[in-house]
Image 1 (tube, rainbow, N blue to C red):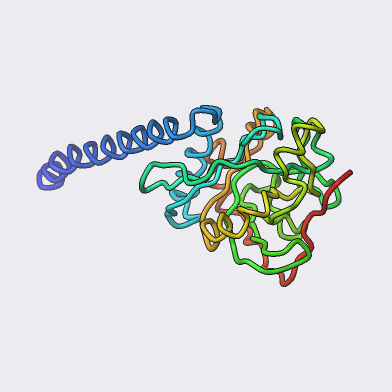
Image 2: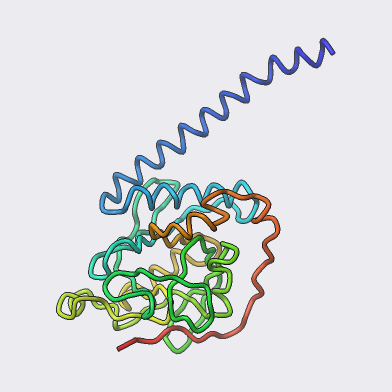
Amino acid sequence: MVRGMTWLRRTLPALAACLMAGAAHADDLASRLAAAAPALSPQALAQALAAQRCAVEAGVVAPTARLAVIDYSKPSTEPRLWVFDLDAGTALYVEHVAHGRNSGGNLATGFSNREGSYQSSLGLYRTADTYVGGNGYSLRLDGLDPGLNDRARERYIVMHGAPYVDPLAALGQGRLGRSQGCPAVRPAIARELIDRLRAGHLLFAWHPDPRWAKASAFANCDARALAARTATPARDGGVSSTAAP
């Protein structure tokens, strides 16, 4: 018993120091990313980083170097997609991104995980492989949030370039063109951005939706719900979203 108590007295300070160092690193990373993305909602960034940490700690994903964050609280006429390098604490891209045509006009207000809803889904995604389909070079996404975006594969929710993601045209018509739920980006940046994100990095789609905050396993870091999550089956091919009138 004495030997065990001695080991415990020696170990606890080291463990506490590690935990404090980890918390300090997380705070430092959040501060650097906030400085790199001043237009991003602080709440969106905080919840994206919390979801990323939760996913790693729960063993859902391996540690990753890149995290994309979509802030759907912002209008589509403004840049609202950030891609961060977590190792460097910098923003690699700040881009416009479309939302689903049934999610709203210039502002996205409705979200769904349902097939045929043509709405965007909120939550954490892991990027997968790429393919060339009806919308060109595209990136498959696996939704990791049970019940909220985990039908992304069967809904063919992918990232791709689309000509209706035109910031200049959006200023004239009051909004970007909309997708069938995909986070579509400008064609000129699509391949480069997709190549930076593909194969196991993370994307987090956020909105101050209280239903998501209540139901998300990542918002609450519910390890039991995440452990029970079944892997999304791989699916060949894919039908990406198209422009909505």
